[in-house]
Length: 159
Image (cartoon, rainbow, N blue to C red):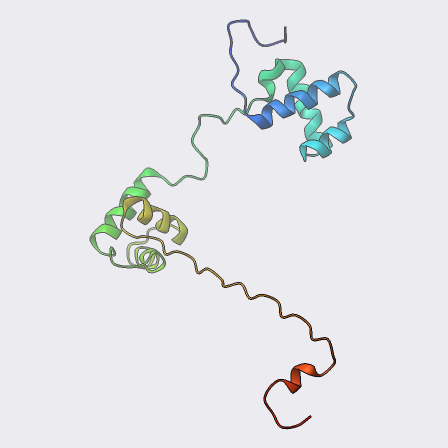
């Protein structure tokens, strides 16, 4: 049984965390070097050392992300979202996302990016994103068998 986990405790791990566990166990069993593990995991050797230390101290639980279940650090404040949606709904509902972002910033001093405004407008149903243009694929022209042949087929009188 691994250290740090009891029989009653269940661990939820993602596929990447399970992959990490297998690789770290291979390091512990001396079947894999830290450098090879770092290349496989696409992290630095120093980070692999950290993972090994966490595995030794807490077992498989040491490899599980501690951020799971917590909100993102980069999320917008709920008050900013509420204020932005109020302003856009009242005054700037018929604007596109870029202009709807510029006006609250200039007039009301609201600090929010245009991409955040675009996401808010889409989620609130105020704005619908346009479909991207589909590029027409032009097939490659087959090479002519003789030099200068292309010039002769253009309908001109010269040879």
